[in-house]
Length: 318
Image (cartoon, rainbow, N blue to C red; front, side):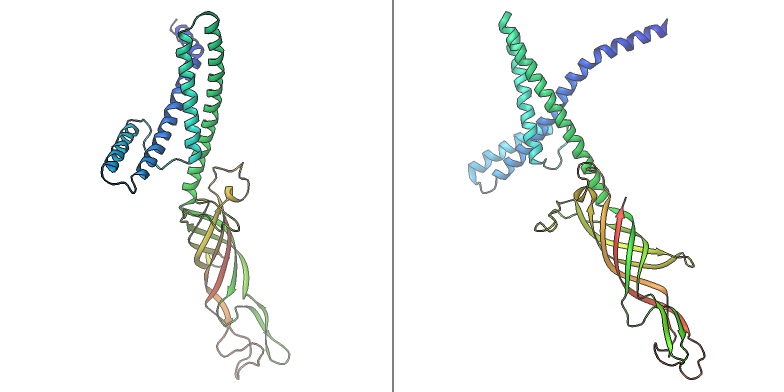
């Protein structure tokens, strides 16, 4: 019996709930829109204080205080100034909500055909309002995704990279060398410039300015720059070499797939720096490329040492 009663309650709740949800959605959307408009009004009122003196300043300051009190009484906490397009859409939503409220009051004061006519206007106004709420909700979700992507982008990140290393010193990095029939040292294969698979970690700062507006015009917070560290895994050694430098990163959503990846924090990155190879092989002391061996030497001798190289990195952060 208890189970049947519970099922009946659930059925009634499912039938009646949509109406409650609809009213709640209207109220919530209007409340959020009101708060966004209040934030914008406070910012504008504060700007008007600039240059005012005396009585005019005191009167404007009083207006600012009243607006701040209204904002403090709102449910949503104050944060950064909302974007201009969000403020405008919120104002439109509030205007549509007021029209619905006015028509509701007007309908209740009418009878007969006049009441029916007002009801038709009210139905159209409510439909328009619900469409606006739906669009505002989608816009709000998109902005939340973008904020989350900004937070993931503007911090420590890790990526897989392809790195090109070019020697920075005067000595050749040797992989193999032999003697020719005349006893002259010949380098069979050097490693002065190499391309390697690297792992990199970076930290990005995100300036509030556009990147190269005359060329790429990447919006603020869609690009960043900062230090990075890269390592090259080895076969004989766990870490073959290590590098560091400065890196520039660009959010994927700012370059490609803007419509399909608005909330992704992954990025394409370019880095420049120095690579340290502690296991580089060079010709032994006294042995010179394309010259005969020193007296007493019978074979080409190599030695391991630390060498520096210029590092160029292209990476992708997931």
